[in-house]
Length: 173
Image (tube, rainbow, N blue to C red):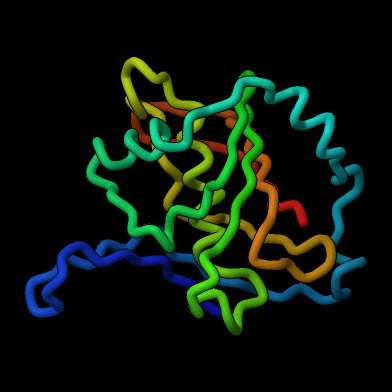
């Protein structure tokens, strides 16, 4: 299947701007959940929270996006709690219960929220700076039970330049 996450700026539908934040193609692989699970790919939430011990102010984190031209409507702001460590973050994501969460195995705003949680790694003095918010997914591999409307997102920053960001991200249920 295909996935797009967009937001609309402006109240007038005739004069609003639609911004696409994320586009993805989903491919099911054979073997179901157990067959797709990679070796050594399990996490202990308590350990991740210890590794990422610095609490991040959510309003400050979202201001980095606003200041970079990425204002998000409430239903797209899914990060409820986030902590960071050295080049990694752990965040609690939750979809709004406004009807937009119905019918999804994995809600688009949760995927977008996992990218948003990466803003927690930005320097508070300079904002996002050269850290780019990811806008595409190279591979999405389900490895456990179906997701709910609230998940944990664990994010590892591998490398970033002025043009690219390389990362690994897990949605943990």
